[in-house]
Image 1 (cartoon, rainbow, N blue to C red):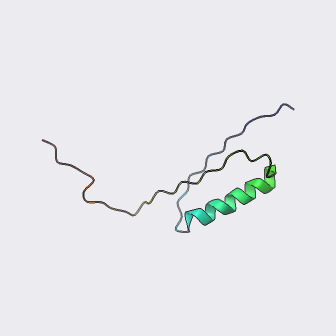
Image 2: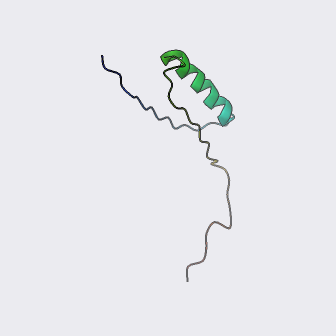
Image 3: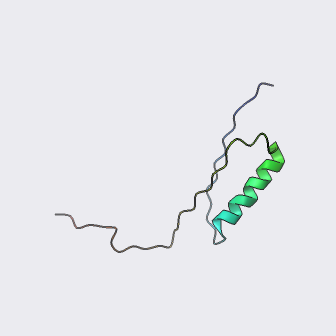
Length: 60
């Protein structure tokens, strides 16, 4: 079979530390495909509970 580049995207909500969860997922993927085969892995955590009052500006 020819080599392929595979991209998998996950989005989920958690109260756990995003960096720790991301590290566990990265380790799991590395075990599945092999460390040498894991080309790229990124974690981005976006807060859901932060409410900013200054994010809206008045409409003129």
